[in-house]
Image (cartoon, rainbow, N blue to C red; front, side, top):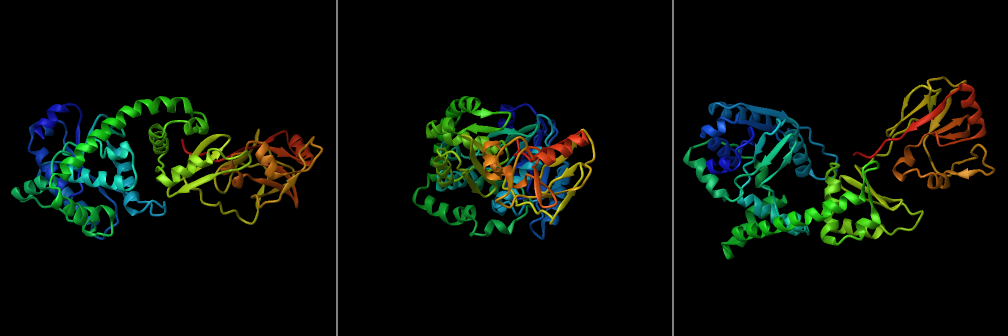
Length: 427
């Protein structure tokens, strides 16, 4: 560790401390170095609240840190169990969100990830059909929140850390979920990798060497796809030029898409889902492709790609009454009058059911909403939250976009216009 600290001499130090044997060895080793303590060494533990013993584990982490003369911050995570990405991934997202939120400026968050962890990661990525970026495994360093994530032990085997713990008789937590072979990583750790190394003892070294080569290749490609991203990405709408993206070589297309999604907090698609996106990029005018996978949905619209978190259907009450007051709409967005005013009568607000028609002011024809939405450039993901304004049983306005003659007269008399602000995809 002393050599690693000399190679990275800047920044405060915080250990991501789970209480397990690996992070225990890391914390103890750093605590023994005056140069680490001089950099404000502390620990951070995340209590996911997913195990009956989690509170006791948090108390253990505080107590052990105290025996080393170190402070341990404990933060309780809120793990979203309904995101469709699985418990492990949801817990990891919650954990890293806390890490990112509580790191100080320039602080290094130090992880106890080792060579065996890297081997498991690379094999999992390989089995999922990853390219150079995924097969490069875990990065030694990357930005995280206001600081940096740092994994200085990636070249060390797990056994070396176990020997350190035993030699110093260090107490640590054993999480029983690590023994559950139904989980992919545990199955690799307990069954697959031991079988591999029984035939190829050099397998861990060879796999991590290949990962380093893939990382170098991915970093070289990154410069190219970042350049492409700048030309394909529209910052105002946060969308991508679909034909331009599709024209890129696969080696650039795949990591560019993953990066664009990750910057929005969305997971990347599988190979099959990405191929479906590619097929839908050439959809004909009037088609509204939507590709969904756990944690994300992607729309192809107006020759551009638009991504967002999955939307739950808005629950509308039987009827909403509105007379001009600011109103938060079910499913997101709002409806107001500008300038502030009151209508002479209360209108009822309803959501689209299908088949509605309206005769817009100064239009000779009655139009169905489907054609209006298409010609009016209303994004597909906003159409089910667009408020329809009724006077009695007559549809007199579609949000602020199309008003009938009756609605036009009513709003003129009120001296105000309706303003609909739809919900927007995350930036």
